Length: 143
Image 1: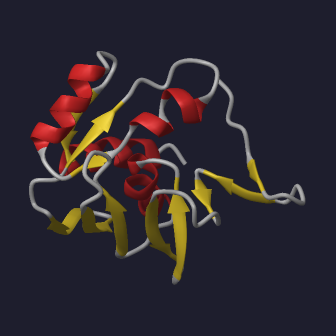
Image 2 (image 1 turned 90 degrees about the horizontal axis):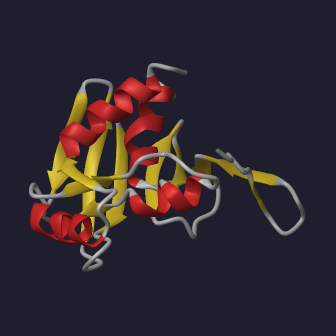
């Protein structure tokens, strides 16, 4: 599995899970500053890794573009909008982590939209945001 670092045009490292690149689809507050994530798991996991008491997360539904917002805490998710939001999860197997995992782990406004993504990609699974946070917490605890 390749964990390529993200670099800018000058070759400076700007990301490795947490990114300074505002072109990434998911945002989170870390240490008082806006940071970006390649995938939904980044914004659910890294606030826990960095022991943020609360982290505001914003994203968009991968199917409709509808805004999705929530707060990540060390104990779970708060203030989720829409309350029906769901996440797709992919296996992290293959050569390029961004291709096989990050680009496929997304937030959706509803479980039905996430299920539609799963129907198109049999490697995916859909879960609630709370369930995805629990997976992210287990990953964060490895750091």
